[in-house]
Each structure stands twice: as C-alpha cells, then as structure tokens.
Length: 258
Image (tube, rainbow, N blue to C red):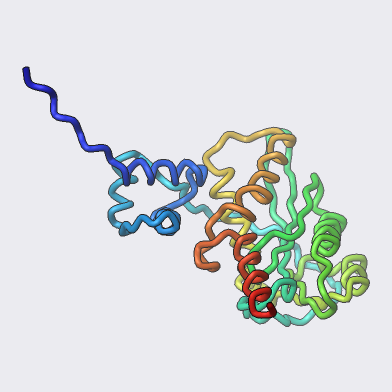
C-alpha cells in the first residue's frame, strides 16, 4: 500500500505569517526582513513578497491626511532652530510636537504628541475632544515630568495658534526649553512628527470601522505605549524599537565609563 507523499512544511512562510500577525498587519517586506534577520533567518525582500502574496498578506496602504494647523493669526512666531536637521546625538536634545485628529462614532478627538528626535519615542501625549492650547500644554508637561531634560532642550512645532499662544510660550520658558517653529507652508520642517501620525493612522486605524471615543482612546494608548514605543521596528533606528534603541545607547555609555 502506497502512502501519500508528505508535503514539506513551509517554515519560512509560517515565520512570515507570524511576523506579519505580530505587527498587527502593518509590516511590509522591509520590516519583515529585518524582523527575520533578528531571529537569524536570512531572506530577500523578493522572496518575502512572494510568500506574502501566496498567503494573502497585504500591509495597509498609505493615505494622505489633512492639515490641522491654523497659522492665520497675528501671534509672535519663533525662529526655525531645527532647520530640518533631524540627526540628534543624545536623548532630550531635540523634541518635536504636533497635533492630529481622529474621527469616532461620537465625534472628533484630537491627539497632541511630543517626540524625541534621538530615538523617535513618544515621550508625552494628550488626548481631548477639543483642539485647544491646553491639549499641547498637557502633552508637553507630561513629557517634561517624565524625562526631566536639562536646560537648552529645543522643542520644535509648526506655527499653529496653539503653539504661538502666550500660555504655551510661558510654559516653555518655565521649563527652560527653547522654542523652534517651522517656516510658513513648509511641512517638511516638522516631518518626523507628521510621519508618526501618518504611520499611526495607516497602521492602526485605516480600513477599520469607526469606534467610540472610549475604544479609540484605548487603541491610541495601545499603539503608543505598547506597539510603537516598545515593539515597532523603526527603519531610522536600524530596525530597533525606540525604547530598545535608547536602552542600547545608555548601556554603551555605561560600558565606556566602567
């Protein structure tokens, strides 16, 4: 009696499926290749692409987002100290901050974040149903109290009315933080903050049904605190998560001083 021929298990395909699932369906061929490499598995992007097609794995497509900046005001504007120099050598040297929006079944919600350019980590954030100056002040306060940066830190934003407000500017002075602002109609001046929001919306929200404010808040917390800061492989950081990149930095400094 002949036995049916056993099919060879698709080990690579199963690894790719698990990596894709662990990324919540967000990873394309570049990040899957990097994740597999960390496990000691070498594979080309073309091979990964073929396997993804075979198993119907499609990373979420990019979409355009609308601007939330209102720069039509007569408030004082700070100079552009950052000048698109996004290469930072140590933590708490340059932060960038921005606001974006999320549509829910119960109306709009607005999220302000503060991102450390050194390791692209979200070090402070605030969520509210109104896009007021208190939103960005709360995000900055959380970042400051968590990180306790030295004097001279630069915090870069666009020139929206919230960031130009007297109250926000006074808060920067209280924290001894230098203010930097993008040039008019130059979105690339704050590209890193805008890229974060774009990635978040594409990876976590687009293609999904609208949720209530409560579940939208839960999703935002999960993305920032669990996935983005601690798990998501960042191409700028050599495909390391932000928290791991900073931990490696502090460990290397400790070894040099030992």
